[in-house]
Image (cartoon, rainbow, N blue to C red; front, side, top):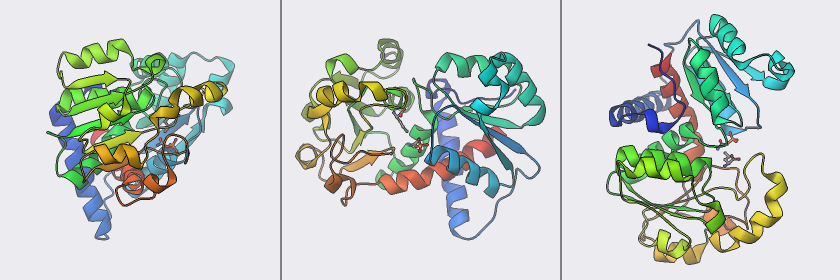
Length: 301
Ligand code: CP
Ligand code: NVA
């Protein structure tokens, strides 16, 4: 049966382990100049309804390195823009392609698409989740910290798509996750409630210092996500106390690593000195998207 990655809540611990191990293996082999081409003859569609630098290009290079052909599909140039039913698009594309990565607004839409597709569908970001980002971020955590079990992870900022996928991952993998979000920007209650059934060490506070206390990993993201541009000014006010800066790092573990999925807004959610500082692993994170996307394509296709 085909397997999708639409949220991390559907994955088992063994799925995470398989993806981390395969990504690490493919990365090491690539660094040693070994070309792995298990997907020769296959085609991967990349449907994007929102802009992307990292996810698009790392999926494209991942596919090319594995021998597959990526086909970038700007949905505005397809009949989707003229209201062709999503189910029909999914059924037709399933006849041409071997897998699809889809970046869109609505989580319901990608789930509808996946239900009608006969090929693996990979969530490349929706308003609600960004699962592939957290998979590659966890690969980065494992590289720097050895494992994610036993770690204190802090999330500072918006209870957004990134936060939701971190919550999903903490539920399955059992690490401690403390989120500091402004009152009106807390994570989705249902996402939290489902996660609490598996892991009670997931907490939400409005105080960034409480969340960052003794943290091994500090994470942040933009204050206004794609599609929320009109809310930028009011969000800047609400999020001003939630900046990742040197004062916040002072209360964390001395070996804390700082993560940001990028793009970053220096001087807003993170200061330039922290983003560029010795504890920042953001460039490793960006690189690991390609290695993780290779593992995802290799395993699902
Ligand atoms: N981190 C991330 O998803 O970046 P892009 O929006 O550039 O793909
Ligand atoms: N939360 C951000 C992530 C960007 C990679 C957004 O959705 O725009």
